[in-house]
Length: 570
Image 1: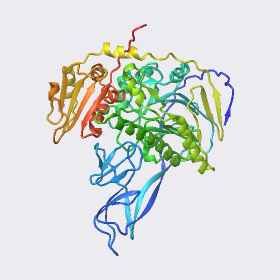
Image 2: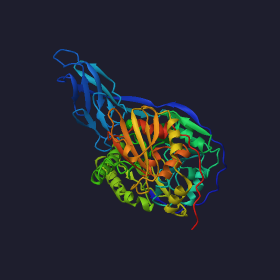
Image 3: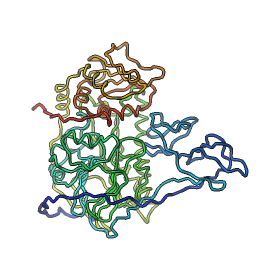
């Protein structure tokens, strides 16, 4: 790996339209594991790596009869589920699987593994090896430059791509601020890129203020989620040149730039990107978590993945926990990212690892307590994971590449050259100016909220109470709206009528900053933006993530419309 001086300037290439086409599917090889059936009892059997439910005891000479078998891997973050009585719980994200129903407490199902009986053993289908049969046998050059957070500039075969552009301004309705200001050159790279990839509709990936720099004819590639959440959000901003890609299918701009979109098995609308760049395999996984159950190509040149910590209001927005418990849950969450990196390295065997989805902060004064609690994994710990792996795999070591927007990384057949780039930083944001914008621009209307909820089409045995609070969540400041989605009744209620528990129902008390709720309703935005921006506090019964509610109001029932951010001078 060499570091060179600043590279000579080149004339900008002429903008020639690039064509996208579907190539085909990955070649797959099914891995199996033999599980001895002798001694398995009728009902649930925990056998370490698997949990199997047998129809009856396995007696001498009898053929085993299996009802189902599952792995003990969390669908959300890939941690090993800890089985205790009726539940198997992830120690990192705390998703809990009800064993009998094979459904997580939040309503997400877990799919049994395929297996067959051979003699006195079970042959279980486990992981799948993926191979790109269309990959060039020749390894040429490709370039990649970290621009900020999850935004990368990628170039190969005369084609350029930008991922998840968030380069200036806050995300999550004025809450999240980039730790380091982007450079002006990043904006220029965004504007000249041939295509833009958006992995999800969260505003740290699909950032309207950043996308405002682009022509409305700019082509986007997006995951084809059932809800069309990313496509709807882009169309709401006026973009119509959108290619929705099917998962695990291979596409190309040319033989030197191939790619495929992967999704995690947890039902969340997140995704990651596989790239084959001049014969080099690359994975970009900003928010995909347990991406494609880690059934991924191996012997990568580069793995770009999250490490610092995710974008979530959990646990600090959940008032069911005291502060000590919140800190403990958050520490487990951070350990989950370390475990995920270890597993990804083992699965993909990369030559290099670059952390992305880099830290951003809650810099507004009103969020200072959250900022102090919301710790991140330091990069040095990711580097230590790579070094530990390399010591036991000396034939295939892994090198850690700290993200640096002043470098363009040029990967060659068997080497890496780092080019020093000009960097002219953009002006840092003033958080209070954005706080003032939202509080002055948007006015909460309880009647409008009721009409919005009535039209949502959401039906469930669930009562959600929207409680407008002041910015520090200390007092109620406007009329409370209660929605009973079971009876489809929506009304304004006094504080004493807030429902915190009711038999046969899930209940959620959502204490929220009124101007933020008003913005979300007025512009058809994702409800998840309120949580990821720490604009609300939740009380829920039972105390589990309400997956169906948040999915409906964050992906299905959205109709995003743009609005102009006008900041007061001074």
